[in-house]
Image (cartoon, rainbow, N blue to C red; front, side, top):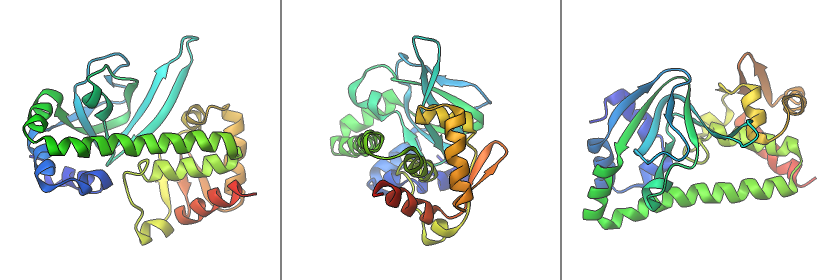
Length: 238
C-alpha cells in the first residue's frame, strides 16, 4: 500500500481524485514505489510499457532524441502527475524517453497486474481513457496557441500548465495568490517551447519586469499564478 507521505501526492491528482474508490484502491494495492537518481532513464522511446506511473516527488523530463542529434523536451512532470496511459490503452511501445531530473520517486502500477484487474472490472477502463483524453485536449490547446499567440503569452500559459501539472492539479485560492517555485532551467524551457535559450530568456525577462515572475538560479518563481493566467489570456487578445 502507498505510505501516508506518498499518498498525499496521489490525492492531489485531479484524475486520481475523480476515479471511483474501487479503482483508487486497486492503483494503491497493485503498485509499488520506485526511486530514480539524477539523469536515470525510467524508460526510452520504443520500449515496451511497464505500466501506469505517478510522480510522487521530484521531476521527470519527457522528450526524445531527434534524427539530427538534438534533444526535444515535450513535458516536465512533477508530483501528482500520472502518465503511461497511452501504451496501456493501445499496447504499443513508449512514445518518448522519460528521465529523472534530480532525484525522484514514483508510484508504478505494473501493466500486467493492472490490465488483468481492469479486464475483470471493465467499467474502469473509461477512467484510463479519460486520463488520455485530458492530455489530448491539452495537446490541441498547445497547437492552437502556437498558431495564434505571441511567444510571451504562450510562455505565460506554459509556466502555469507546469505549475498545475498540465491540468492534473487544481490551484486552490491560496495557491493562486501564493508564489510557486518551478525547478525548471531556462535551457529545458527553451526546448519545451521550441525556441532558442536567448529567445526564451528575453520573454522571461519581460514577464519579470512586469512583476509576474522572478528568475532564480536553476528555476523560475511564479509570483502570482492567478495573475499569470490572466496575462496569458490578455496577451492572446491583443
